[in-house]
Structure formats: C-alpha cells, structure tokens
Length: 83
Image (cartoon, rainbow, N blue to C red; front, side, top):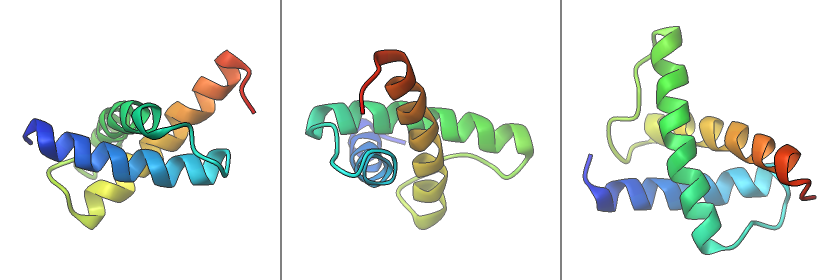
C-alpha cells in the first residue's frame, strides 16, 4: 500500500476510532498518527487470527484498521491519562 493510502486509511480509521473511544476526536494529526498505527496493529492482529491484513482502502481494511485504532487509542488514553 502506498503512503497516501496509509494516510487516507489512517485518517478514516483514526477518526472513527476516536469517536468510539472518546467521542470528540484527538485532533486531525493525532487521529491520523494513531489511525496509521492502529491499521498496523489491526493488520497484525488480523494476521494472527488468520483473517488477513490491511490490503488497501476497502471496507474490510477499514474495519480491521478501526479495530486496531480503537485498541491503540484505548492504550494511549490509559497511558497518557486522557479522558
């Protein structure tokens, strides 16, 4: 996947995950960063359970990336102590 695809996927996943975790978002750049990290984490987790990984900007990849981003955001909020 190209860098632009990762940014787009990260933005989508980060925004959705931030709405799920803290309802307000963490800012565009933080949403993108945590979304990209979440996409990577989601891809790793999906690979471990045998359902594939993040392969492009499609609904399956977005779902996997959002799940990973929710995990990353939850951990981020626990570590930083953010609400």
